[in-house]
Amino acid sequence: MVTSIGATALSNSNFNLSPYQLSSDGQDIVVIGAGVFGVWAAYHLQKSGAEVTLVDAYGPGNARASSGGESRILRSDYGDRLMYSRMNIRSFDLWTKYQEEWNASFMYPSGRLTFYDSDAEPRLKKVQSSLKELGVVSEILKGKEIQYRWPQVNASGIDLAVYYAGGVGGSSLMAREACRVVSEQFEKIGGKLIIGRVQAIPKKGSYDVSMENGEKLVADKYIFACGPWMGKVFPEIFAERLNVYRRDVFFIGTPAGDNRFSHPQLPIFSFNNKENSRYYGMPDLRGLGVKFAPWPDLNSIDMDFDDRMNHPIEVNRLRNFLSQRFPELVNQPIVGGKVCQLTMNEDSHFIIDHHPDDSKIWFACSGSGHAFKHGPALGEYISNRILNNTSLPEYDEAFRLKKV
Ligand SMILES: Cc1cc2nc3c(=O)[nH]c(=O)nc-3n(C[C@H](O)[C@H](O)[C@H](O)COP(=O)(O)OP(=O)(O)OC[C@H]3O[C@@H](n4cnc5c(N)ncnc54)[C@H](O)[C@@H]3O)c2cc1C
Image (cartoon, rainbow, N blue to C red; front, side):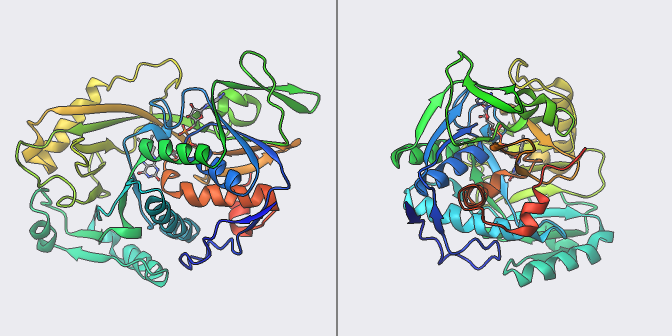
């Protein structure tokens, strides 16, 4: 069966998989994990005519998953890694297209403001001009203008910032909601969703893939998109390759009747200047509170069994930071907290490749703290690669399962 997802009119981002003539050859595919990698891969594969079953231990965008946070940032600036800028541009078009098509609202044009030390200017100008060639426009701001435009943030001592006015340069995505919506749409086009844990038991150079109760999952291909759990499912492959780090996230309540910290008054913000504690965050969206997350933050976590209580040390660190940069929020309550985890590998590239000994088993993982925004384009890439053997050499090489 050959179908087209009819997306060829979307932007010319050079993340180019056109023409979208996808052939499933009637394949049965099981996708394990309904985080952002899994739901979008399942959706695109099903749309291409494959018979797809999506299985998740706790459900799409669940509270333990890395995709289970309230919100995630979409941005194009990736320094000299323009392959991700191009993929983000493609994703932005797809988020926009599907949001309209499904009458959903999981994306906000927040804008994005990043603070730097003055010596970063030559590097920022380089990034600015390479992104301009891709159609992504930014402003480099200096001195008093920064404080003038965003008086609700204390920018004292900061002389340099970059601002993207929403769209592909800086938007907010409602993360767990988007996973739920994509999964629902996947079911609407005939996909099957199962809640349960899957195991892959090595057997004579291959694997027996089954539910935890032993029920076999028989398919032509399996795509394991288990995010931070990959080291538990395939310890022989991923224990050495992936590191999983705990991340505390806070939501601070805005003062009553005060919308200066809410969308669209406050953009996404990130302090990349050399301070003791670095934070990034997002404006209050839908009354959830202003999001703050420390960066970097490298503690370990067990996804299945650890309590997800915010650490008192992190609360103190955040209050110190607020007193410096958001003095009007320092006495506001924490109205929400989350403990999530990043899955990192050495080069921060995603891993999309088949098992070295068994070409039926595919891996789609290693979000490395930046995969959410790329979900729709990743789903498209995975679907094309697996069904059609399509090659995008730069991406295939970057996403290769590399030796450790
Ligand atoms: C605090 C934080 C902030 C972030 N900010 C951003 C951002 O601003 N922008 C951005 O683009 N990215 C961001 N990221 C990264 C992004 O969220 C992740 O890269 C992405 O969500 C990873 O998705 P995933 O599908 O690989 O994993 P997950 O979302 O964790 O999904 C894996 C799924 O697999 C299931 N599973 C695991 N084992 C099994 C099994 N044996 N059987 C069945 N199911 C199983 C789990 O239940 C889970 O649902 C952030 C991450 C964190 C933690």
